[in-house]
Amino acid sequence: MKKINQKTQQGDWKSVMVPVKKLWADVTKSTLKEYREDANLLEGKEKVIFLINSMAAKDITRKNFIQFKDKNYNITDIQRDFETHDFDKFTGVEVDK
Image (cartoon, rainbow, N blue to C red; front, side, top):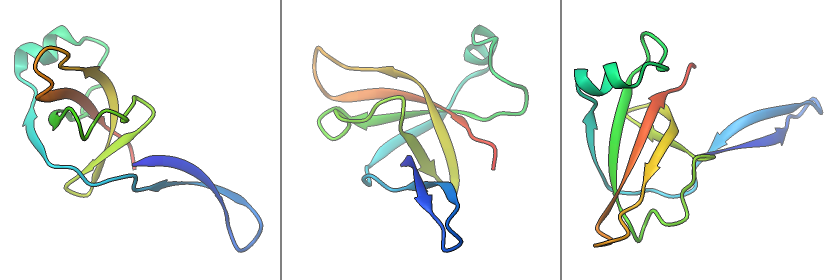
């Protein structure tokens, strides 16, 4: 997903999320150890790790969002797999609605 500005029928501008592409991902929640190590995480926010095929994810940046189970996640960290080019690790934090 990415955020764009769209003009409404009233002529106002509104920020909306639009899909960029659909991808397969292996999804895991972060462990308690990872929560403790990431002290800047806001309380009550869900932190999820997405493993996405490297070739399919090559154009995804931290400006994009991930939608999973009707929730949007801000990409906070990307770890690219430059050795085997199998899966890139994307860390996402749930966005307020």
